[in-house]
Image (cartoon, rainbow, N blue to C red; front, side, top):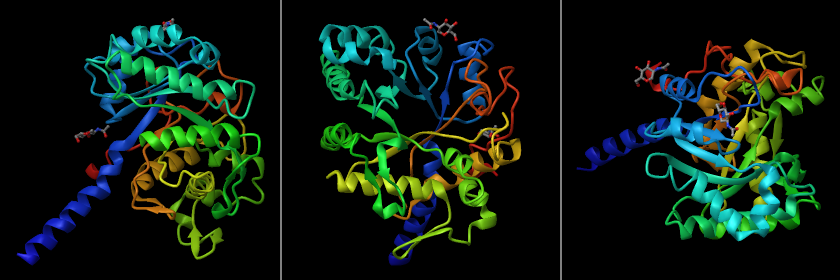
Length: 341
Ligand SMILES: *[C@@H]1O[C@H](CO)[C@@H](O)[C@H](O)[C@H]1NC(C)=O
Ligand SMILES: *[C@@H]1O[C@H](CO)[C@@H](O)[C@H](O)[C@H]1NC(C)=O
């Protein structure tokens, strides 16, 4: 009996180690004039075993294409709409009536996100009231099960090194602290965009490339030791700095979802190459199921940035974060079903 239980348990743990893979999504950025139709895009997600999609703003053509797809959908608001969402209850209600309610029967909404990377900044004060109005509007529409959150950049951190010293900056803390309390009381995660690439690119002579790429070549070599903890990759170090900051801000239980991470395949920046992008993205997919040193074993729900190269973004690396070209050919391969490998 005992032996059977142990066998079943280890089988379950094996399953658990694969289940993190289900939490991999890809951002569907649309700042381009040459992308395939939304129906083709949804089919491309499905064909690649990508389970979740992040949309930066509502679009009813895209939402219609997602009907019945089974994909989890993170739906953002335009940053430009935050002030009105925050100050006008009826606008929040009509936003929900236009973009969530008509689709909720056939579209699996994961989160509604009020704004992307607006803290700190001029619109930061609108984020929490916009979240509150969207939540009320969703509840009034019978859609209270859809959680409301926001996505922040790691520029909310004033201190991130070593990871255990992670803390929000003075400029960000007033808003992020209140948002963290709001989210923690609802057990809704905070979304964070995490880019080892930009940290590497800003100082390539002192940041080891393998540490930024999370490559197994340096997997045994800790580039950072923090107390008793050895960090072999920057992704974990950044995430743990966010967890430490949330602990300092009084929200130790708050979960974090990585709402963007990526590496450019070209565009001329330091380390921007197809080989590095392929290595980074595949490393992320393989790694996030096992958590970070501060949250070991806790799979990190993660969204890769992005589905396509986007030709209307600023020139350079910004146009080269896609997994796919606009003609739907792969820029490089990401294996979203490593269990089949
Ligand atoms: C998607 O998953 C199916 C079944 O799990 C597998 O047969 C197929 O090869 C996968 N496709 C890709 C592109 O990984
Ligand atoms: C919605 O997306 C489609 C397909 O990408 C695009 O053609 C259309 O212009 C978008 N609609 C709005 C209102 O942005």
